[in-house]
Length: 325
Length: 225
Image (cartoon, rainbow over all chains, first blue to last red; front, side, top):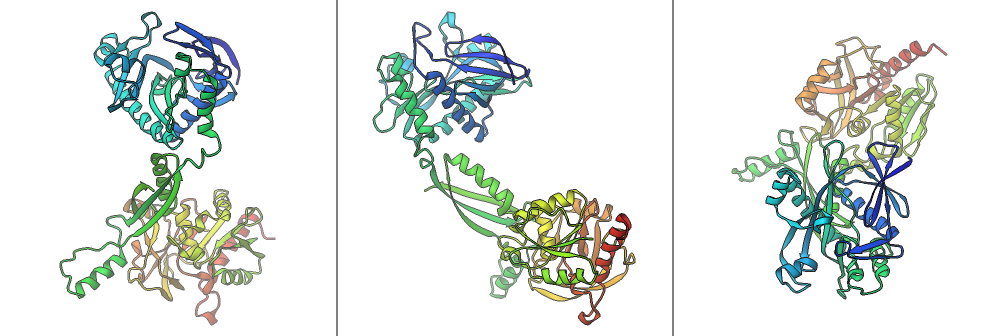
């Protein structure tokens, strides 16, 4: 894999072409800007921290079935991604009032929103990335109706996954921004980055800010906050931060497959006078306890277990119930 | 010709298979379930028994034993694989043969001689039999009720993959199936125990001819040593 010429330099990243037509080489920078470029600075080590944090989030989301551009880390500050054409839309998901939303609707920062809010911003530096609604988006042809629906649905799903994942790491996901892009094959996938630059993270116990707000508002210890987020994702205790789940798995013979044991039970019941019984199917009941970062991930693993070992798809069906313990 | 008999925890027909091969005066080894090198074997036998206690489903756990990766490879290389009883169940679970096993229709463990019809004598395992010949080989199983969907059954029929049928179906198996072979013709699974019918003292010698077929066909292909 060879890094070729630079295609683009943004506020926080540089993008390079590679000798593979469908892959880009991304370099994360230490530069920081805020308020649409009005405030400029640099956070020591930010490029490396965000590169790693973003790779962890993207890998985890991929495990949850959220397709994204991340392929692999290339160096502490660089990663390989799938080439996409970024849609000129930023999707912002908000769980708690903060930043521009708090200002716009007059909510005190920290107010928990009764319903998760999804916002779209038109990516245009000269206009200051204005808020746009679906009607604007349609008129400006920034995305098709189907794409817009996909963006909203996927972003809400990502919100659920991230919120649960971070909760076990004692981090509150206040809000975050996502960007999406279209691959050469025409598929719309998650792209850009997910890091303290693009999310508001609050410590669940102290409500301390662990994100770029520390830079925006000159709260100090910016680098430490980014480091703390990485530590919560990878450090000791990150594994222990997994939740425990208990699943009950029911395996039954497929309809139409002869069930000799069920038939025998049915005749015995009939003999006992339970003549109303029309059918008995005997199945298996299993309890599986497992650890996972999120319930969705636990379910995914459980399905694999059922398909690979716990049931035989030739003759059996399975279903399961799962809950956190 | 080198024979290997796989030994899983809970196999109990391994010795019988070993003895059956000894009658051919050919070298035979036990292969432990943890083995990862089967390169020297020309024919691998998965014997009957209750591997891993038949927990979950017969053969379901044995199918993930380390040796099974190698058995799959050997099958791919075209080597002869013979699964008998529990060995047949393992072959089904591993997907080397299509279908699955259900409990016997009568729920009883059946241990008795059965009359089989040789439905295909054009396999490396059956050339010593006549097509349509009736042979006597004992069964000993609680889950030998072979099941597959109609589409799979049609394919089995079409490709002449049904090698043995019961004359008087004892367990409820689909289409009286007692043994099937893969499409390529090198992996045979059967519920009856040919290794228990290799001496008239045991009541039948009909099983011995299966092993003789294996040897004769191998010699024909590789030249007599």
